Length: 130
Ligand code: SF4
Image (cartoon, rainbow, N blue to C red; front, side, top):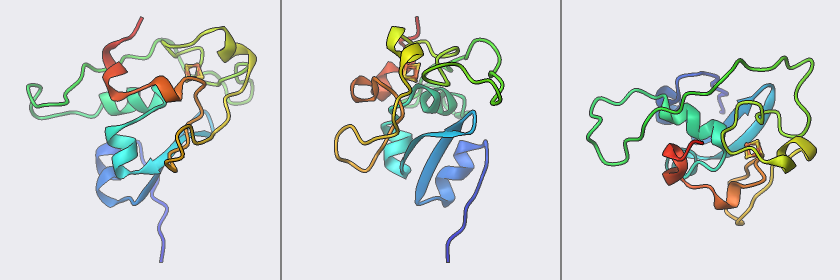
């Protein structure tokens, strides 16, 4: 028996899911198990979503500032070139407008991410917005 649970509340998703897929503008941008997604997110959109989960104690270890995405989501009928998240991503570079990032494993850990820079991204990047 398997369930597909679709939600915006990542706190609820964490408690009932074995495998998690994060979607942006109709495409999966990152998948992984609970630890991979919540403790080592490699896609900036996943990081932004996780930073928006309310925490009861801002002094708790691992707490991070909320990432506030600029602008509105583009239309899925007319998505941006390259990476669909690039118009709201604080890490976007020239290649992001030129090439669609493949959803692929970067380190052989069954944790695929559709970001050109997933291999160099870590949870500690959450507060490094530019
Ligand atoms: S590919 Fe570029 S725009 Fe897309 S999430 Fe990664 S850094 Fe951001």
